[in-house]
Amino acid sequence: MGSVNPELVLKFRNMLRTFRADRRTGSVTNRHPWQTRLAILELLDLAETEAKLHGPQDIRILSGAFPGHFYNEQILDRLQAALEYGCRARILVWDQPPEARNPEAELLLQTYPRTFQISWSGTREDGENLWHFQLIGDTAYRVEAPHAYYPPDARFTDYEPPTVARICFNDPQLAKVLAEFFDELCQAVASKQSTVSID
Image (cartoon, rainbow, N blue to C red; front, side, top):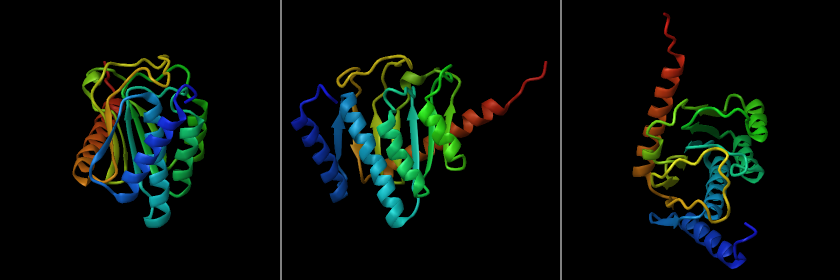
């Protein structure tokens, strides 16, 4: 976030933390990748905190790609902290598996084989129509409006590409819809991948 005014970063982070602390039902909007990173970090921190206080949380992430330059060490470190407290994290990437994998994520998969999973849909079909999201437990999320496909080698800056999204820390109704949608997608992908045709 080197190109972002530090005052903007502080203001956005404080807004997220205020909404989180007050368990507000309203939402914070975001548009830029630097805001997305801060929102994901705050959501993962929430997962860790909730796990410490109330027990492990489910973390569900539906993404169009899983690039290492975006899901970087800082985000994966926060994810690992949540996994350490027993959280279960499942990531579904709506794309073909890449030739080169994120080595930090691969290490987490080896370290937490029972509680961390990354699945690939094997297709990009209708991916532009999916809502990508990060869902923590049964109340908090960040959900994006459908947008164009970003290939795994697309370079994100602090401001590009813009993706309209909203972050909410207390919306059990939509969180339930997102959880059910995610679980159904995962089940459909697993079912498709386990089907073998014999000619």
